[in-house]
Length: 98
Image (cartoon, rainbow, N blue to C red):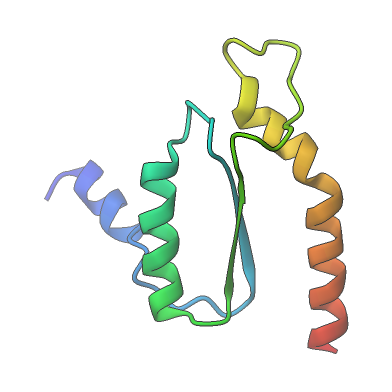
């Protein structure tokens, strides 16, 4: 087994998640394609019902642009856009987990 194969095996999504996670994706992101993220979320959710939240920014939703929209565009812009929503999600989890 190659080193790459071993690393990929360790990264396989068929694992138990013990805490809630949130995955955010912009439909227009050209660095991380939604066609890859969506199946990953489905696999994680199947094994971990009620632990995975998936937030998709659709192409008609505004996403912040970075200082380099051509190269970084929606990928890093999603981080800035999602900040307030993510903070609210974390706060809600903190209240629920007490």
